[in-house]
Length: 79
Image: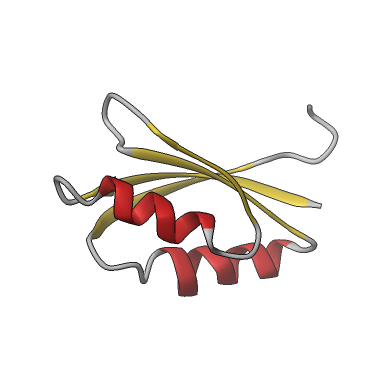
């Protein structure tokens, strides 16, 4: 199982809408609004790294009003 944590910056006031859209995506296991440098944290899981990359690149990063993302990939065996 491949896991990634995606930190998102979004346009002011769009956080709740983006959180709702993220929760509807396959592979998104958790979504949290945050305080600080980033607005939202999402935990993504997929069977393969390639599917994980596709979810982030073609689904999450295409959501309107997301300004930027930072992806942190989990390391298998280090939990």
